[in-house]
Amino acid sequence: MRVLLVDDEPLALDRLKVGFDAIEDVEVAGTASDGVEAVEKIRALEPDLIILDIQMPGRSGMEIARALRPEGRRPEIIFVTAFDRFATDAFEVEAADYLLKPVAFDRLRLGVERARRRRALRDAEGRVAELGATLAALRGDGRALSAPVVESLYDQGIWVPGRQGAVLVPISMIDWIEAARDYVLLNTPLKSHILRARMNDIEQRLDPAVMLRIHRSHIVRIGAVVGVERPGKGALRVVLSDGAVLQVGPNYQATVEAVLKL
Image 1 (tube, helix red, strand yellow):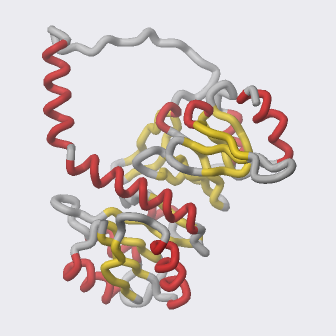
Image 2 (cartoon, rainbow, N blue to C red; image 1 turned 135 degrees about the horizontal axis):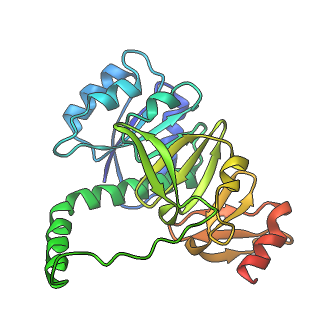
Image 3 (tube, rainbow, N blue to C red; image 1 turned 180 degrees about the vertical axis):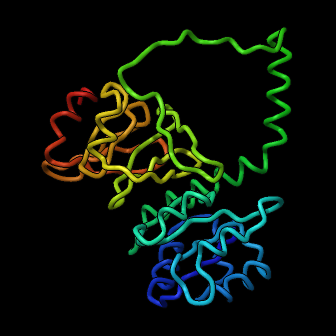
C-alpha cells in the first residue's frame, strides 16, 4: 500500500514516518506540507492511502477530500485532527478513520488496517455482487429468509450523520466505541463513524449483554473480544478481533472479569 503523508507541521510528519516504520506492507511514497502541494502529490503519486491533516495553508484537508473523484482508484483517507474544528464537516467525507493529534502509533496501525480492508473490499465489489446473485439463485426463489422481529429495550443500531443524510450503523457491526472529546467513534471493520455524543448517554442505549464498558473512554462488543492480557499486577487489557488492545480501567475490572468469566 502506497501512502502519502500530509501535514504542515514538520514534527508531525516525522512522527508519522516513525509510525509507518513499524507497519508492514506499506510504502511512504511521499510527503506534503500544505494543501497545494498535497493536490500535486496526489496527482503525481496516485497513493492508495492519504494521511491528511485538516488545518493547512493553501487548501484544507477537508477541501482536498471533497475534491477527490469518487470513481476509479480513489485513495482512502485517514484524517489527523483536533476534532472540535471540523467534526461537522467530517460527516460529509467518506474517511476510513479519524486520529487525534499527537497520533498514537497503535491507533495509526489500526486505521491503516481498516483502510486496507476497505480498499480490498472495493476491489472485490464485482465478485461480491456476482456471489450474491449466485446465492440468490441457489435459494430457489431468490428471497432471503427473514428472522422474526424481536423487540428490545435497547438500540439495535445507531444513526450517524452521513453524506446523504444519516446512516444506521448496526450494533452487531460495531467492534468498539471510542471517546474523542465531545464525540464518539463507532469503530467497525471498515470504517470509523463519528458522532457527537457522550459515552454515558451511548452506554445507556446499549444492551449490557452485548456491549461492555471497560474504560471511561471505551465500550467493546463482547463478541469482538478474542483475548485478554495481564501485563502487570492489577492491570488488564482486552484484545479485539480487529487487533485493538484496550486497557481496562480499574473501576471496570471486576465487571469485565465477571462478564468474561475470567
